[in-house]
Length: 216
Image (cartoon, rainbow, N blue to C red):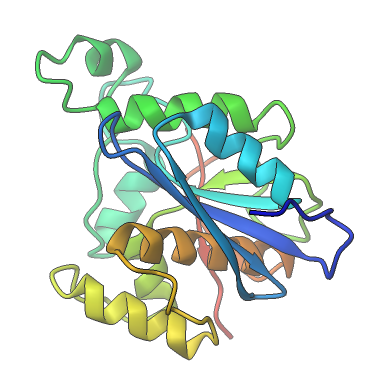
């Protein structure tokens, strides 16, 4: 992998699919909306460093950017579920750390990634309008797929549906050899939309926005 400066055929964006400590994380970079590179690591700091080395100005992450302050689903999660898009409800940090089987290990991994990213890429807090790089934000592949399709799509058929949506978006999927890379590419595609100012948000800045592409 060769690092590219942000000025080389910008915009360069990245997306990250977050897994637990064993599974690790998968990242995909796009340049001008086309596939550029991929990377995987179990260490959040390495993923963040790769995004910076690639020159990504906009970074979408499939993980909660904030913990629940109430112990209930965050506003963005409630809004998605009200539209028929099922998603995880983020717990409080205390609940996540105390779970006996580390059920929320992937969320803890994601929180660590955001901590590393936000040193150079502040978290997106605006719900509309042009966005200046560098910035990072939370997104969610199932919500992305529904936004791109313009309807609620099947999560059970995600391998087929999401690959098809990426192909329709003009992205070469030949290097996306597993669903984690596919989801990372979807997150990167949202980042491309954010760079163009074509995005929609759920929730509020205080509890964390979830960002999806705005079509049309």
